[in-house]
Amino acid sequence: MSEAAVASPGAQPRNAVDFERLYRSSRDDVYAYAAGLLRDRAAAEDVTAAAFERAYRKRTRFDAERGSARAWLFGIARNAALDELRRRGRQVELSTDPADATSAPGATESRSDLRLLIEGALGKLEARERELVALKFFAGLSNGEIARVVGISPSNVGTRLNRTMDKLREACDDAV
Amino acid sequence: MTRSKEPGDLAAALAEARPTPHEDFVKELDQRVAAGFPRRSRTSGTPLSNLAGRLRGLSPQRLAFATGAGVVATIAVATVIVVSQAPSPQHPVLGGQAPLPNWRGVQFEAPSATEGSAQPSRPPSYGAALPSRSAVPESSASGAAATSGRAHRDIERSAEIELLADPADVADDSAAVFDAVHDAHGIVLHSTTRSGKRAGASFELLVPSARLGDALAAFSAIDEVRARHEATEDITASTASASEKLRDSRARIDGLLAQLSTAESDTEMNAIEAELGRERRHAASLRAQLDKLEQRTDFSRVSVKIETGEPSTDSGGGWGISDAFGDAGHILGIAAGVTLVGLAVIVPIALLCLLAWLAHRTWVRAQRRRALRGA
Image (cartoon, rainbow over all chains, first blue to last red; front, side, top):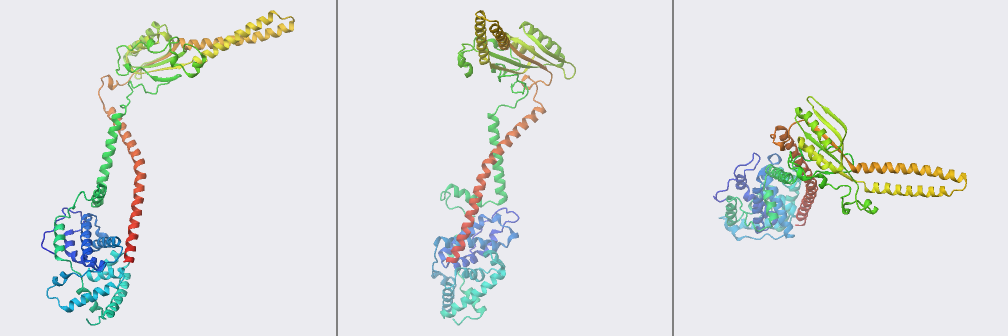
């Protein structure tokens, strides 16, 4: 995150989320999740911005008793992403961003190959499976948090993740 | 890349492939966050959507507080409007709406000239203001009377007047009532006078209808007028009917007399005389009935009551705590009425809105699930 000052939300109710901290810790994760699900960087940026704006406006309605702030934020981000999917009505291929290669100084050719391989394998997954992968490995959510975001039980999350990883592994093997 | 069969390898590969946001996007988003997500254009959406967006941003507590404040303000404004348009609370002074007994006929308020002040200097002449038996115009006749073809109306009138007096003045006021009745050539049918703490008096009077106005003016001058009612009843139809029956009966008597004079046998004479007797009794009954009706139009029944109690607010008495309670109760009653009416309007609309919102929410969730499956 840049060093730009983040607005203090002002006086917050006891339950209100610390938006500044949540934004700093979750911005890249939300983007990674959205990009992983939508496979469209422009749409992922829109969804990320929309998610944080919605979260900012709803920040006083956060209830800590119903889950962590990150789970709450990713619930909002998921709704924004699904709304984007609804609008598009179709899947857009993940566009390659030349800036990504330069954004990681020192990236090797093998890392670019790996990235393309993973992206290709992810493209063979269903959106629901891709969402689990994005939440787990791109956003770094725990199974419990994923369960709350997606609306299934934590054990079900684990089962589905295992299956999805198997499929992803097979897709990678096929690509190689 | 080598085959990524190991879970750790795949997880590491996924971490490597994790998408990262563009720097320009990050800077822009940071700025927007720093600015508190300013709305890009207040005119970009419809006013309704802008309002909905603002409401969505409110916490439930603030939303409930704002809604409650709005409802209370609406009730207050509506109550003020209703109170300002409704007549003032009816103190038992002059409003003329105290539930006094009504003898008969249609009751109506006394002329407004007497309602505005507690102690009118002298009310207008009631003899002129109210239609007398011979002066009522045809246009005011009832439908039944109009069909009778009579050119005048037979009006029975009654009046009630309630005076407010100090307990010490009840006796003098009662004497003044008797004097006024005497001056009007009226009759005291019944009178009661009480003394002590609950001092007061009541009179049942018959006053010639032609002098009713003067008599009421005289009664009003005795003491403070607390309430006054007058009622009229058009008995033209009854009078006309009785007159016609009497006329017919007399004609039949004349006819029987003519038959009697030409009767040839005793049997025929006896039969006619018996019939004549019955008809004469019938005629006498009709005459008595007609006399009663005429008496009801010639004399007006007047009830005069002298009560003692707290002076009215309109007569110069101070506005006291009981008045405050009365006014408060009146205003609270109106506020309750306004609330009830408002609820009757708002609750169905709110229920419809709630159902629409729930349906929309369910539809959106279903669409999101479908979008995820279809993607």
